[in-house]
Length: 385
Image (cartoon, rainbow, N blue to C red; front, side):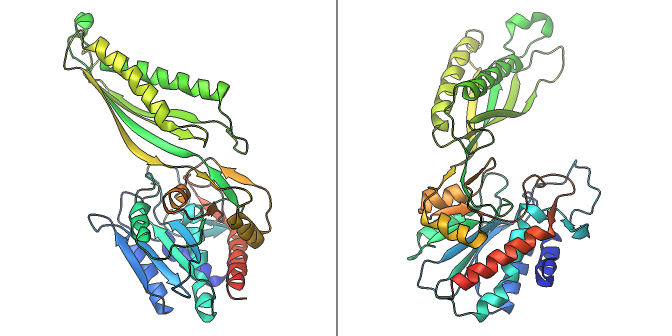
């Protein structure tokens, strides 16, 4: 069983509904108070509306790079999911701890915070930095403000460990993501005179079909990167809205799609090809009406993570986990931003599994929390010995 303080902190964290649509300030207030009670000062980095915030704190010497432990505080919604457990109350059954965010990724944050009383007792020769963010789930949005703050720091962390759920495997790679919204403007008319209109739904369908063909090309022709369950870039259309009535040629249709790319693929090159195809359709549409258009707007973008397997950060973190197999994950993290923008060597390693994340009755097994607690004990020892 995980230690009592870990479970107490996890229970408190789960009690805050930090779905990305909500503020996370109440949760951050709890964390700040927890840290202050241990004599640790922390800094909030707010969003523009001051409705959400990142938190950054340093334990130990302030004049050395140190180890950054990073996690996001937001969660995905429970709306429309068939939960049998109370999502915002921690519950236990057969060694599993249930609640939204237990695995992704409040379990990691709880273990880290529960280790703070021990950390402050020690005379660290190398600092531990805590970096907790907002709005990761909607495209790694909030952490960018913390990264801007860290750019100005005279000393950046030496390495970063992202505590996303990997079953405590050390992960060195994940794909990047580019998401876009496409709006097709056609020309409406009575469906009985359909050739006189420009059917926005039909043109959107042609664009979606182009994206599907791109997905097939990537599947069949690559490039490929071994280590992933799906070793090629994927292209996916997620939502479509268009039309008002069957007897009206639709003048509007919009859809969202995403590209999740391996390191060898450039998503912007794919987007350039997509926009070139869209331009040919615009020309065709405007033969009937000059006001027709296709607008393509990138809504979310973050880089992949590709840390060399022989990097020092990999050896260091593997020494804390005793896991030596290289790993990759199919979901994204903030690690690519820390690595690419700040140049901080980064790996992903945390308790729980994304097999449980984002699902009803999300849970983390107690043994995973224990493994993470042991990881923290070893980390503290390494930084004090």
